[in-house]
Image 1 (cartoon, rainbow, N blue to C red):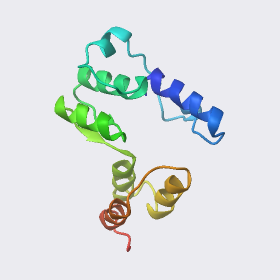
Image 2 (tube, rainbow, N blue to C red):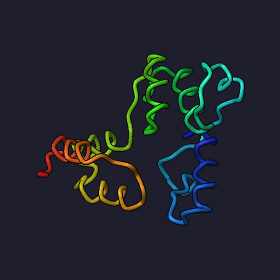
Image 3 (tube, rainbow, N blue to C red):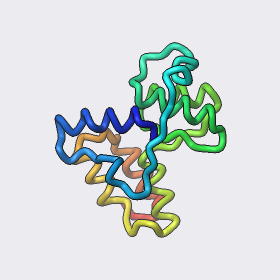
Image 4 (tube, rainbow, N blue to C red):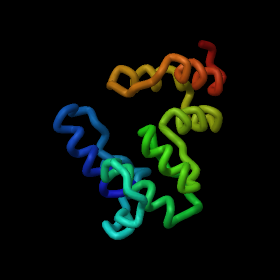
Length: 132
């Protein structure tokens, strides 16, 4: 995870104390993405976290860009990157038997302000093999 994303999450904790701190996750590794790498992106109005994810993924073509922001996803895809969001990660995790259920996690996301349309919610449940 780029340091810029961790800094955005730090700011988020000022508003919501339960915002995740990636430094506390044993499976997450913080990485540095230079300002020069970010500046090489086409002009855009994305935040530093999204820009750093896209810049890193461009430099390391073997990885997925983890993005939920619509405009960030569109830019990443226009640049030829493969993109996955939190819902896709949850569905893949369920299919790999890494988590027992997707529904409670989707519900928790919604409760914390994550925007999730009803049709996407239902499709995620279907893809995860959970009845709607």
